[in-house]
Picture (tube, rainbow, N blue to C red):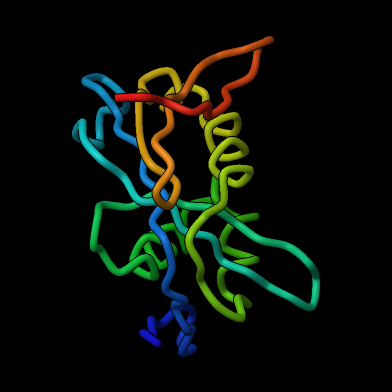
Length: 134
């Protein structure tokens, strides 16, 4: 099992099927278009978890470390610095992230959750991932 460091602690990274979403041009000024992987920090004692996106094959701990001093991510950092482990994000976690990041979500297109091809759609005012046949 791989290990990353968050808040000066070793945090195990669980393997597993990837969760990816492709973002098109104009998603966010600081982000280039392309594929992003989604990771979840899990804090078992509180039952809380936090989701981030990062570049493919990047150390997911790096993304959590970069938000440490950013006030808009204070809730995510609180979970990340106490995380028992990091794991791939589930479909539900990906949908929650999309709906918490509406500006980026509107540029989300297709992706994969494990071996399942998905497409991001807006239904009933919320972003959802649905099966996609390429």
